[in-house]
Image (cartoon, rainbow, N blue to C red):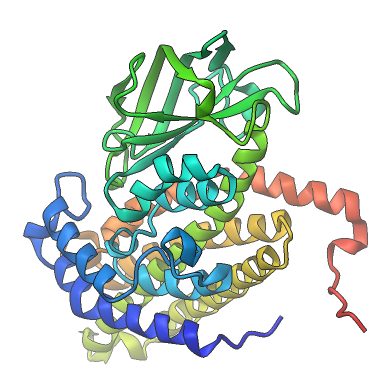
Length: 402
């Protein structure tokens, strides 16, 4: 692959960087711009979103006909990293989870009528969305084959009953993609459905308290107690829910990594700035070998993450599922983010542990990175499965056509 980016992608990167510097970071630094859950409040968010749209920095991940900027996966990798220099960045550009992944899968899998009804309002920013798949024990988590939520087919459609939990954004979402069991077939037993907040037969049981800051709408437990949906709410087709899930989660895992690299760089930036200014025992922290080793190691880790992410993005653009590449990126970048926040706090000392910087926010947020969209151990097992199947072919170079 060629690591040079196009002038068009560089233009978007530079404009996003300037927008974050001029508009988003000042909002992050303003305590009145925060909501009660550690995110940007709705009023300043609406103002920043209007500015981002006016500057053509909206929905970079979608095709032009869907209302996006058609930057492709590699362009997203460059720009998402730049967006998340601020903890508020991605949502400003309508590139935050879970809307980000939901829009991409709807663009790919929905019918034209479904796009008009379910995708377009998310693209415009009129509504937020959620992806309801994960269940509490003994239901499906990393293994969707364990799913217990059922959709019973009737003459008029489907009746859905079950429980979901840790559903990101559900408390403020209007549009939902719900995965439920329609048969016991191991390959075609799951079906994806579209439903609205106003549909009867379901409710938010609770907003689950968590260690870290929250996305808008939190992480919720949902109860489906006989929700009736017509047949036109099925996404792709009955029995294709596992395929919908795979289509959504692969790219979504990678976009998490793209954003986390931006946060890791921010941690390093805060650490370097403090080390340059802080003296102890007559020596600047930046001149101490121990600090130089920590920062140099972080710089290397971030660059390794960028290469893993870009290779996975390139593979997706070539039409590959990139399962191996995405798993490697997910493991490395999730752990890198946690390490970057930890090192940043250590170098800043008490200042890092306080709320005077966003390091403590990133540290609390970072712990979930090793769990969401597949725990480290799940992705390590995926890699081992590829290794067992491919042997020495696990490490190969794609050969260009003659």
